[in-house]
Image (tube, rainbow over all chains, first blue to last red; front, side):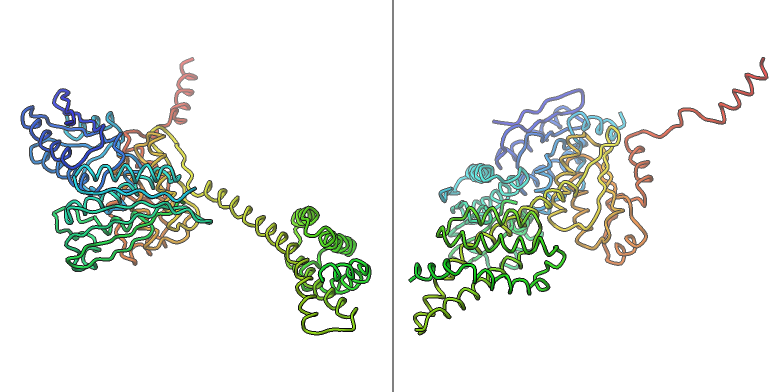
Length: 118
Length: 134
Length: 289
C-alpha cells in the first residue's frame, strides 16, 4: 500500500503509519517528488511518530528525499522520531546532520512557517 | 523457560521485515526495554539486508539465552554468499560497496553487546551477535 | 560410625562447649567483634554453640540455624565470627573424639573428619548464603537508589527542561541519561533541554562523546540541547583533548543557558514592576495633592 501524501495550502503532509520495506520506501520517494513537482509545494512535513524501526537503508532514503526535495525548492521537516529510534540511529552512526527536525506535526508546521518566512 | 529457537530464511525483500518482527517479538517477550527492542530489531534488519543484497539467500537463527545470572538473546546469521575478503575493511565506519550509508556492520556491532564474524571467500559468512537484558 | 561419633559428642557436649568457648574467647581481636560488650559476646557464643548442637541432634534441620543467622545479620556481626566459630568447633570436636579412643588409624581419622564435616557443612552453607544474600539485597537496593538519582529531569517552564548531572558518567549511566533525556523531551513536550554538567568532576573524551551523542539524539527527535556548567578546567580539557563541540551550543552557567533557551522559545524575563517607577509615581501623587 502506498503511503498517502496530503496537501494543505502549499505544504504537503505525510504520516508514515505502516512498516516500511525497501520497495515502499523507494516508491514513496518517487511519489513525494512527483507530488512536489505537480503542486509546487514549498514545504513538507514527514511525521514518523508511528515508525518503530529506522535502519540504515530507510535512513538513507529519508536523507535522500530531504536533499532531493531541497533541490526542487521544498523544505522538509522530519517530526515525531521516537526516542528509541533516535538512539538506534546514533548507535548506527547515522546523524542526519543537515535534516531539520521537530517534536510533532504542529511544531513541524511552525518550523516550516518560520524558515520559509511566510 | 524451555530454550526456544526460531529461524527465518531471508530470500525476498519482504523477509527483512519478517525477520525484524521475529526479533522484536522475541526481544519484547524476554523483557528488553523499548530502546533495546529497537536496537535488536534494527541490527537484525541490517544483517538481513546484507544477506539479501550480497548473498541472495541465508538464514537467521534466534536463540534465547536463559542462564542463572542473566538473560539474553543470541542471533546467528548464516549465508553461503561470496564471503568477505577483508573483514577489517567492512568493519570500518563508512565503508560500503552498495552505495548505502556504510553504517552496516560497525553499526550492528555498536547496537549489540557481542559481535563475532567468520567469513571465507567463496564459502560464505557467519555472524554471531548477542544482547543481554539489562 | 557417624552415630557413634554423634553419641560421643552429644554425651560430652558440656566439655566440648567449654573448650569451644575458651578458644572463641581468644579470637575476639581477630574477628572484629571487639566493639561488642563482653556480656553480649558471651551470650551470643552460648546461643551459637546451642544452635550447632541442635543442628547436629536434629540431623540437619535448618530452622534454628536460619533464625540465628537472621538475628546475627540484623545485629551486624561480621561473617568472620561465624566462620571462625565453626572452624574452632570443627577443630575442638575432632580433637576431642580422637582423644576418646585408643585405637587411632588412618581410616578412623578419615571417618571422624567426614562425620564432623557432615555436621558443620550445612550450617556454614546456610550462614554464608544468608550473609551473601543479605549483601546482594543491599547492593541491589543501592543500585536502584543510584539509578533514580542518576538522571533527574526538571521541567522548569513550558518548553524548557533541565537535566542536572552530578558525579561520574560511565557508559551504562550515559545510556540511562540518554533514555531519560529523550523520554523527558517527549513527555514534557520540550523545545530546549539544558544539560548541566557543573557536578561532573571529569569530562574526558568518553564523557564528551556520550554528551554529543545525547545532544544529537535530542536533535533527531526535534528539540535543541544546550550544554551548560562548563567550568574553566573543563573547557581546558575539552580543547586540549581536541574534542569538537562546535555543533553543540554551550554556556558557562545554567543562568546564561536558561536565557538562551528563553530566546530560542521567543520569550524573555521582564520585571513586573519597576521599583524606580513606583517611587516616581509616589512622588507625583504626593505633589498632585
